[in-house]
Image (cartoon, rainbow, N blue to C red; front, side):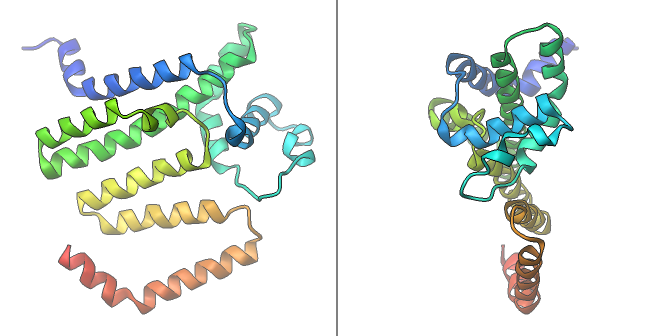
Length: 218
C-alpha cells in the first residue's frame, strides 16, 4: 500500500506545481500597480481599520467609478487569520500584502482545480496534462492570479461557470453567472439593480424554451 505522502502528491501534484509558480511570482514581485489600488486599499482598510468605517480611505477618495467591496471583503475574510499573526509578530505591512495576495492566488487556483477536474472527466488525463503544461508555461494567468484586479476576482466565477458547463450542470453555470452579475451591479442604487434583475428574468422567461432546447442539444 502506497504511503499517505505519495497519495497526497499524486492527488495534488498539479496544484502544487501551479501553486509554487504563483508563490514565486508573488514573492518576486510583491508590490502592486495603480489598477490594483482600489482593492488593495479596500482590503487594507477592512483588515486594519475593521469596524472603524470612518477611517476608510474610500470615504474621502471614492474614485470616479463606483466599485464593489464584495471581492475585497471575501479575500480579506480568508486572509484575516494570517494578517492577525503578522500583526502579533509586529511584521511590516508588506507581509500583510503578501498574505492577501497568496490567499487570492489560492482562491483562483481552487477554481482552476475545479475547472481542471471537469476537463479530466470530460476529455481524459492526457488533455488534463496538456492543460497544466499550457497553464504553467504561459506567463500572464499565474502572474496575475495574485493581483487584486477586478478581472481576477471575476475570473474565479468564470472558472466555476466553465467547470459547471463541462460537467453538464447548465443551471449551476447560469446561477454562478447571475451571481457574478449581481456582484458587479452591487455599487449601483438598489432600484437600478432591481430593474436590471427584472429585465434579466423577463428575458429568461421569454426565451426559456429556446434555452432549454439549447441545453438539450448540448
